Length: 168
Image (tube, rainbow, N blue to C red; front, side, top):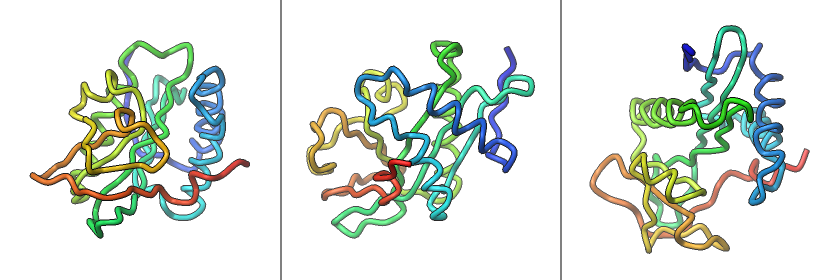
């Protein structure tokens, strides 16, 4: 298996939509709207990073990164997600490769840090951890995690772009 991580191109968009839908289809803690979120982020110009994992000619993974707003006024913070891997390819390290590539890309772009909503055991492997002063309203603290690329994690409420409300 030789996976290549590339920036999204126009010819990948349909495959990303289908892949994202399939990846979250049986997820218990999912709104099952992740494919709509990715498309809405793209349509609104908020998809800062969109990387695909390619195996041969097939898109087998995708990760999206978009800006977030923090009530403290801190800037250059981003939210990672959704991240999707084709169901039959999960557990093969593709998600980890995409995570590392996405974090490297936003650092290259000058990001101060990144937040993610998800399983602490998984995202902790990449340096994410819960910070008591950084809050995503309505979400249990342990599932909302951040990684700072400097020496500071801001305090305040985090708001993802309205594209995260997309339902179609």
